[in-house]
Amino acid sequence: MVLALALAGVLAYDAALPLWEGWDEPFHYGYVQAIRSWGEIPVMGRTPLSKEIEASLFLTPLPPFLSGAVPGSISFAESSKADRGQRGRRRDQLLQIPATAQTERSNFRNYEAQQAPLAYILLAPLDAALKGVPLVPRVFRLRVVSSIAGLLLTFFALLRLLDLFGLDRGSADVALCCIVTSQTLSASISHIDNDWLAIPLTIWLMVLVGGVARHPGRRNAFAASLVLALGLLTKAYFLAFAPVLLALLVFQASKGRLGWLVAGADIATVLGLGAPWYARNLILYGSLAGTQESVRGTPLSGILHAIVSVNWPRSGVALLRSSLWCGNWSFTPFPKGPLNAELVLLLSGLLLLAWRPSKLDIGVRWYAAAWATFAGALVYQTCSAWVDSRGALSTTEPWYIQGLLPGLWAAAFAGIKGRGWVRFCVATPLLCLAAGISAVGYLRFLIPGYASGNQRPTLSEAWAWWTAHPTSDLQWVAVAPPFFVYALLGIYCSLLLAVTVSGIWKISPSPSAGTFQRTAVTDAPLVS
Image (cartoon, rainbow, N blue to C red; front, top):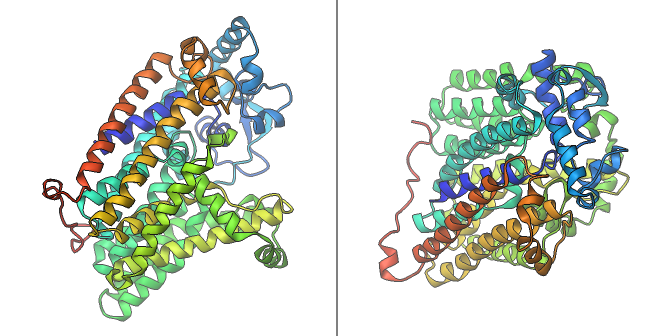
């Protein structure tokens, strides 16, 4: 049921999310088109967008940040003020952009050209097969394929993660539901970008690190090394994990639990697959990571100044809150109260776990080491962004933390595991809050907000929109027909209600509910 819920959720998100409302989506898609149309890996500062994407920026409503940066484009609010005839003509022109524009170069530079290529290379053949399809349905189909692939990879990584923490079935089911209903997770993998692959690889890598610590066999070690290599070809932030896996392989070999030849072969796998890309970054940009901030230059003195200047408690809370809800590229705000309550309940589970740290075996401890290393890299990224923006940015992007957040959920539920009424009193409101935020997000903010142009509607305004003419409004912004959006939304909300009721019953301390509990298989090798 939870898997069906997650699939319905990402499909509904794919369908309802307007064209280019996913953050940086036109530039990520431009990367795919550069591979498919011109047979080249983009280069920062050189590779442009196609004329098709350029034309679309003037024919579809854009988030405020992007519409402000592209003179002559329109925002969602401006589009909603136009009459139906104007909106219809723009939509028709968007669907009728000539196919030849896909291969023509525009004057718009692609500022996502520095990204590692693997996620885009995997999408390029599908994009080539769809070259005869108009832009809007083509983007929708690419979203569907990438988001389903990303979700399935994420879902089964989460199952391994919850087993690593030794959660019983009831706690694991509830934790899983809370994680997959997160708006920011759906937003991260439900548009064309590289997060659909980076997020599951992050979770898998940290779980496999725990697996190598617990069962240092050659299969687990090779799987962890291969995932790290693929991660390095997907996103530069996987560089943060390389020291942890290297230290683990050397440690296990020094203890005689893993052969030195095996450890050396695994390290060679990582270097052989990942090193050429980062050598390219050094040659082209003079930077190993190749990020925009590092290419522009971030002096060590600036990083040290940022460390003492950033308000870290405020930055951390803002990052955690936005990791649950970020509102896509328009950054539509959600009421802070429910999000803060969710964070407080998570913190209570973590505090309870701190009372029994001896229960954390070596696998979880190495997982925590990988988690902490990546968190440290995010601190550095925050400092780098603060310096690059001259103090305007004091927190990192919420999609970077999506691979880390499931570890917090798993740890919190491990803290309340086996505590009877304590578990029930913490897990029940967590589940209800996660489900409520997800449902309200769709019904109040996302769908009515984009269609009406009022992206911060009150409850009464959202109700007035739903009872007016929602279909005629939605057809101008959604990438799928309105009936398809509403059908998926109905399925999602029905499954959300069923999973929530089932989850509450499963974690009830009553004897009848307890018969459905099981002990997680924590001693089985992760790779067999």
